[in-house]
Each structure stands twice: as C-alpha cells, then as structure tokens.
Amino acid sequence: MIHVEGKVVVVTGAGAGIGRATAKLFADNGAKVVVTDVKQDQGEETVQQITSAGGDSMFLRHDVSSEEDWVRVLAAAKEQFGGIDVLVNNAGIYVIAPVTETTLEQWNKLFSINVTGVFLGAKHVVSYLVERGGGSIVNLSSVAGLLGAAGHACYGASKGAVRILTKDLAAELGPQNIRVNSIHPTYVKTAMADYGAAIAGKTLDEMGREMSVLGRLAEPEDVANVIVFLAADESRYLTGAEFVVDGGGGTSVLAV
Image 1 (tube, one colour):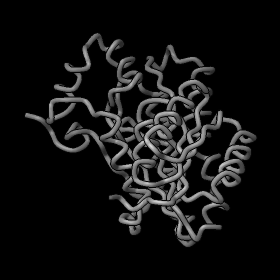
Image 2 (cartoon, rainbow, N blue to C red; image 1 turned 180 degrees about the vertical axis):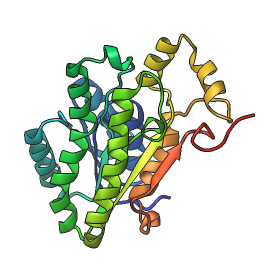
Image 3 (tube, helix red, strand yellow; image 1 turned 45 degrees about the horizontal axis):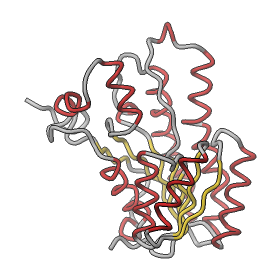
C-alpha cells in the first residue's frame, strides 16, 4: 500500500480523466478526498464511485481561475475533514491552433485555468499545509511543457509556465516542509486525447503506436499512480522535480 492513509487530499478537475482516476486511487489507499470540478454532475459521479467503494469523499464545485472559489473550497475542505495535506492541481483545458489563429480570448482563458489556477491553489493552500507540519503539492504540466510542437503555442506556453512555477514554489516552500513536483504526461486516454486525435486525423491506437515505444497511449491510472506516489510518505525527499509519463516517447528515448 502507498502510505497516504488518513491524508486529506484536494484534487481539482476530478470529474473525469486523470483527476477522477487520481481521486479514486487516493481513496482506495485510505485518503480522504475532496473532489472539485466546474462540472457538478461529473464531480458528484466521482464521489459516488468513491463512496460506493467504501471511501470518504466530498464534492465542491470549483472554478480554479476564481480566487474567491479557492478560498471557499479550501475552507470547506478543512471544515469537513479537519485540514489539508495534499493539493493536486489537475484542472486544465487544451487548445490546438496556429499562433496566427489563436485569439487573445482563447489565450487568456487557457492561462486563467492552466496557470493562474495553479498559482491560486498554491497561494491559498500553503497556510493549511503549514498547519499540518508540511505537505505535498502536485502540479499537472505536460510533455508540451518540455518540448515544442506546432499548434501548441498557447497550451505549451501554459504548461511550460507550470513547470517553472513548480520549481520556484519548491525552492520557496521547502523550508516549511512543503514539497512541490510536476507531472508531464503525454496524451492520455481522455477527452483531450480524443480532441488531439481528431485534429491529427488519427485514431488513438495510431497515436499510441507513434508516440510511445510501448505502443499505446497512457491510461489515466498510469498518471494517477505517479501523482499518488508524490503525495505519499515514500516520496518525502522529492521536490522541485519533473516526472515524465510518456511511455518512452520523445522526451525519454528515441524510437528506431
């Protein structure tokens, strides 16, 4: 068992995909999970799946780009479970477009969620983690935050920002025993991969064979496993690091 039993974990964007898989894995390992999402039906479904399996969870509707929402959500999490030990900044959106066709509205909206949301989460969770003697923040970046790709000026810039923000936070918060790490997945079998495949005119299977030496795309659980590890006691000396989950794709090895 990964040692997260009894920890209180907030997972944003946990109504589907990586967020849902992460919330469920935390609960399976004895953590108390606060599921947040802008989509109430999906978030409540995640909680139902957790509680029906015997886990302890609650749902809070949450726009991560809103500072007021962050203040409300974290206060409610503490009220329900007595404190907060872990924050997983998972919520994000995806845009593929040539830079000449990317609107300022698209840019600002994506950054408000993908970057500002991470900043606000870190800003407001620190005091709660300090109350517990420290904790862990896990930020979802992407391989797009490590490598450039056509059509990814907006999304890639946002994920690159999350990568460096993570390292800045790790340096600043380490003396308070708060660890901060980033996760960099390739395409995962979620709605984002469906969107990317449609843009590329390929099937998910074709993308998996092209993008990974393992010959497949990642499952949400493949990423969730790494996230939960970074919240666990076993990773207590890991901070400021980036963990690439790409199945031996372009950031890890070169297929021949």
